[in-house]
Image (tube, rainbow, N blue to C red; front, side, top):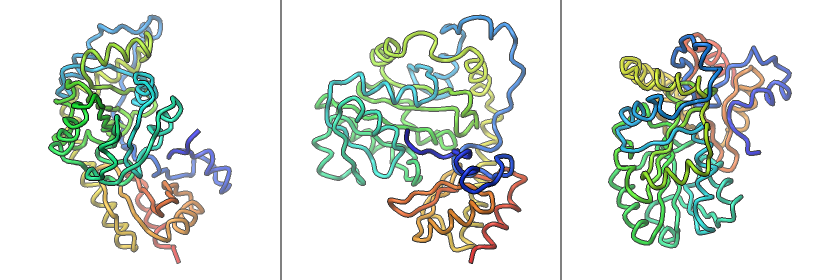
Length: 324
């Protein structure tokens, strides 16, 4: 199993601090989640239905022509490697490592790149990237990605773009182009909506590709209660608008606080700030000793700070102030 943010049980055991006393900033999940209404008991008593309107709601929200609901985007990224014979895959580095793990497990050769202009990309059959990137918040332009897709499709290749952090800036999404053959876009309700536990994701792609994915996933991949919650969340346009403003303001507040303590972010987006620092290990240990859990990256020393809940800024400020 790969290491991820949110692994508080590990932190609690390592630092001897009860779970309830932690401030978890390690995940990049909106701390103010979409409010869940009461779920009718009947939904628990019947199998999920594909004709419950969720697909149409998702198509409207993402502005795409075809979409497949999945049990989180994780379910889709694990199955996509099964839909191709072993091939050459190039993945952005650093990036969410579950992608590379899934493709390697199914016999594909995975290499990494840091720039879309690298010559090595001309040898790749599949190119994987997150936009905006996780964890660096780097963003790629729609023009550059569509140009890359055209190059790939001309040789039978694929472009897979994980847009888990895109909801705060939907104008930069590739969703409206996802009907093109060889283009796959992953979306999720886990980050912007703060509903990681509902395990709701979507794969946006050409209809023929989605049919193959559906066959590989099998029936009832997304639970009925999760489908209901997803419809409500995607339809609430007033909440979307309010939340985008609040997240952006909160993220800028976090960037200023970190900069004040010598942790000027290298980059950030509406849901997290990415700080590259040679003292990443020391900062991580210091904050953890005070019940503050941030994501540590050791290969390139860096920290990712998610947004604090509205009532936790004092704890974070105190933790930052006490660093020697």
